[in-house]
Image 1 (cartoon, rainbow, N blue to C red):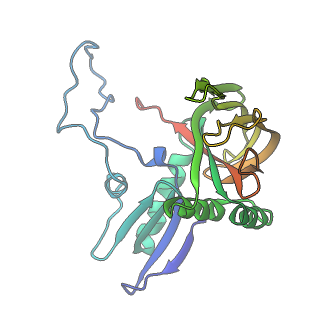
Image 2: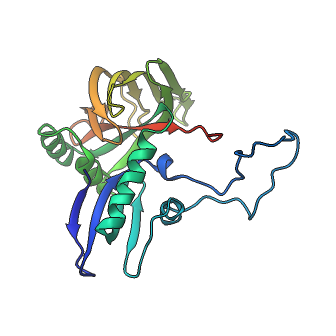
Length: 274
C-alpha cells in the first residue's frame, strides 16, 4: 500500500507515493503489432506521429487516468518515488496500474551499485542508522546530498542486468601509469559476481554477491593498496536500497570511508505482441 497524505493545496485531494522503477514508467508511441493481417517484415514502420518517450503523466493518461485541475505528478528516478496528487478515485486507479505493470510478463533484475567516499564521521553515522531497518533509501539520500555539497565523492558505480537464478560477472581494470618521478601508480579495479533469485511473491530478492574494489591513490605513493572484498548473501526487495558494505583503506583511511549501496529493480519484460 502506498504512503499517502491529504493534499494541502486542494480539498478532497490526496497525495500518494508509489515506489516505481524507471523502466516501469517507460512507454512510447511506437506502432502497434496487434493487427491480424499480413505484415511485411521488411517494411518501414508507420507512425501516427513522431516516436517519443512518454513522461510519467502521459503514461498514466494512456491507461485512462484523469488529471483534473490542481492535480500533479512528480517522479524522482534517483529514489524511484512517483508522487501523485489527485482524487482518491483516480489514485486507486494509479495504484492498480502500477501493480498490473509489476506482475506483467517475465522478469529480470537491473542492479545498480554505487560506491561513495564520505567523511569518516558522516559514514559511521549512516552505518549506525542503517543497522535498524531494511530499506536504506534515507541513508543513500544523505550520502547523495553530501555529494552535491562537495563533501563526498562517487568513487565508482556500475549497472548490470541478470535473469533470476543466473550468475553474472562484471570486471573493470584500470592500467597502471608512470608519473614524472618514475614511480608506478597502480590503477583501480572493480569486480562483481552476482547471483540473484526472485522470490515467489515476485518482490523479494535473494542475492549472492562477491564484490572486490580498489582504486589508485593519486596523491600518495604508499605500498600497494589491498582491495576491499565483500562476499555475502542478503535478502532485499524490488526498488529497495541496501547498504551492503563499508570500509576504510588507503592513505585517507583515518578520515574517509567508503560505503557500497546495492539498488535492485525487477524489470517486467512485457510481451508487446499481446
